[in-house]
Image 1 (cartoon, rainbow, N blue to C red):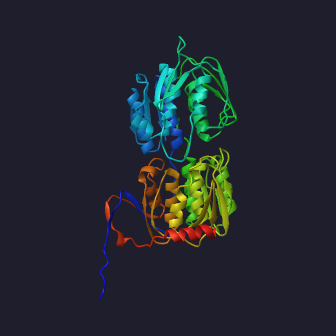
Image 2 (image 1 turned 30 degrees about the horizontal axis):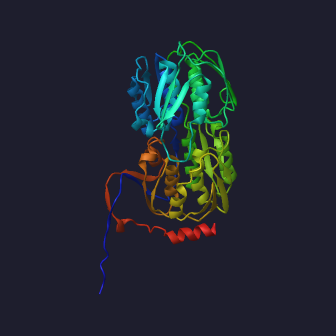
Image 3 (image 1 turned 180 degrees about the horizontal axis):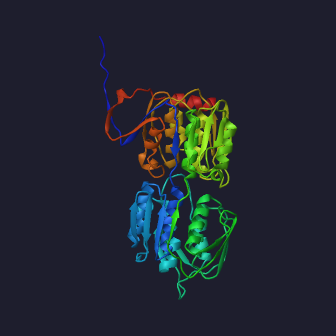
Length: 458
């Protein structure tokens, strides 16, 4: 007597469906840098004149920052990949909790608001849950510039109590080269009285981009990109037009996508010096990389072997590419180690990769990886922006089909990702149907026991 299988239906939110194993070809186009565009938008609060920012990616994070600026009283006009901001009429010094909670970069508004209105009230920021990202360095820097700052019930309240409502230049040494703290202090000191120096400053390209735009607005910023930045305060800043630098993290993601699918492709526009550490590791693991014109790179993967990496601030290997590089190492010959030294909760992709047949064992901040012959398509989910990118790269290389959920994370930092990958030859689509027969999913999910076995083997 035959038995009839019970077909269960499961709820699936909007997701990507990926048919793995298809090589990429052609050109993968890199958008403007999200992490630069967000802080440039906040810097628009520093002037009463109009600021035009070009090469801005169309992302949910950009939408949230636009809403924040509108809430403060600014006028925001968007045209394709350009944003025009006029902050003449800003009047509100308090940011709404709902918007701030979903975007950590909203905290960048605190310095410009202090210089323009003499006060700011901002809830503690949110964003991806990848570990503690304290704002102590931001607050200590603002206090050193003369602001009164207190935190009450998870709300940061800052004021400038001097008669002229101006901050005062000073010497500040950061305990850690925090990108966010460097940018906060840099913006706050542009209109301060006198000279400010930031020692042990972060050196990331996004800071150099901010300084370049501020200088075109009339600021006097020297040394951006080095460990010591000097700012001489000016009376006022003017409007300007500025184009955002290419997104080095997206460019790095695409280079790794080529490597994991063993596909020769061209990636750009990009600035190679922004990716030196990543290029070096890709070459070390078996990729040939050459210049293709002034702003593009051609990558030709060969046999991929395991290499070790440790994340560190720029110019070291970027923490934002640790997860995508781990996907690559999961398919490499031999073993590798990846040590995360920037954020303590940035290994959320390990379990999902193991579901796909990867052999990764996590020990504190270090992932021990034993490469496997192939990954297997599965139903996987992203827990933050960069882990989402890593999982999608794994799906591209996997045997069979995958369903990826976590678009709310992915759409924060990758503009039209599935469209770009489709144009390069992948088979990937965004789906919105909400229920699916579980028995219709073609690939068997690897069991918890198998994952534990893989951990021991690694």
